[in-house]
Length: 112
Image (tube, rainbow, N blue to C red; front, side, top):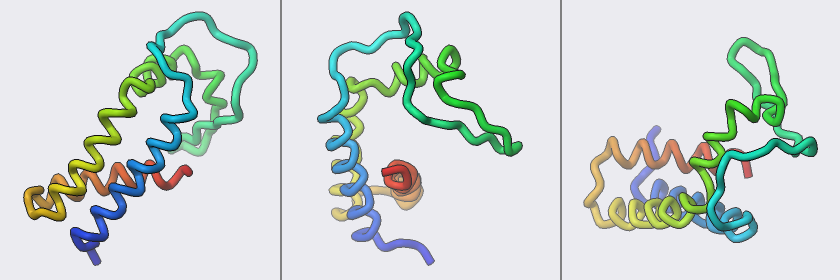
């Protein structure tokens, strides 16, 4: 069963609210790849083959990803989720675009 446009719009707004909350408590400014620190949060990557790796151990590979998703991306992404929700409710969003936006929102909300 697929979600209705109002349900998807609500999902998008929930994801935008979560990102806004995270964005507000994240160090701002310009992020860049620089030296590596010994301290690290407990974030573990679980791979499809069942193996795991501490994300900090993979920081050389993950640093560009983190920089790409820096606070500079937060504002535009929050705005896009809300604008997309508005367009969906107004009937201006194609079904495939709504489905992709909903997939992103679900993935964001899954880890709150």
